[in-house]
Length: 311
Image 1: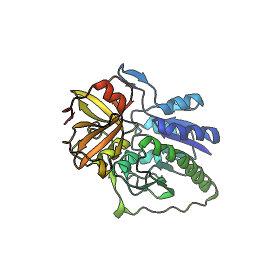
Image 2 (image 1 turned 180 degrees about the vertical axis):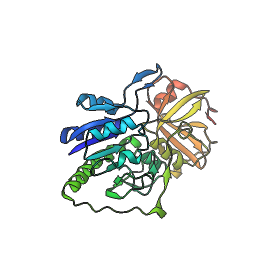
Image 3 (image 1 turned 90 degrees about the vertical axis):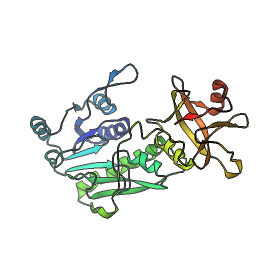
Image 4 (image 1 turned 30 degrees about the vertical axis):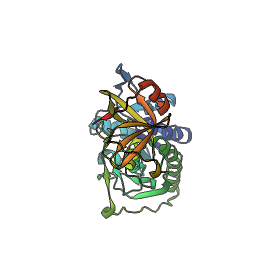
């Protein structure tokens, strides 16, 4: 089966690598190279690097509506297009092109969490279960028929990196299942229930900022949702600081703190006030330094009794 692949970030690289090893991937469409990091060095998308390693033709169009591009995509005569974390809507002139159409791997329990960042928003909402879905692409965002879906249990302390580590092997397995289903005509598409649909937006810098007036569980869920990217952040001594891991403090260990106010529990534990009590900070990263345990931060920062994160 000839496959065209659309994707961009590191999370999509594993699926592309699997497809290249097991199928005939005839082209890859990915985002343009962009400046990244403090030095603004131009970097290739991870999917592009994987395509180069596998000698697959790479396309990096500014738009998928260009007529010359559409004709070029037709020339590959692909049987199926597969999309995962591409980052752009695909027009009907493209997604209707292949013999079997175009499918999308979406890490949510569709119709829940349509749109961008479903893993992160599921964690922020504190749900105990999500899923991996394979759906046919249609003109409406993430609204196509579901071809395969499998649930995933979410541990209350699991972060986004760990959840993606569960998503990817399962997603790859479901893609294989769907490809086989196209070949032997064994798929049973299921229409999505529009009345149950929910949507999630892209993660922005403001999304990742910690509001210390929130409840401890909300802050805990935000921190794990933003790990590894972009990192939940706050201000400390007028400088950005990232919080990578937190823990809920048992009721019998509560102390009275204002939202954002910092204090030590014993010699090594760091807590901060929030809307309904306190939350423990396990891992933290001052600007320009590596992530560190709370005890190292306490020793290095020489906290005074009235130190606080800034609103």
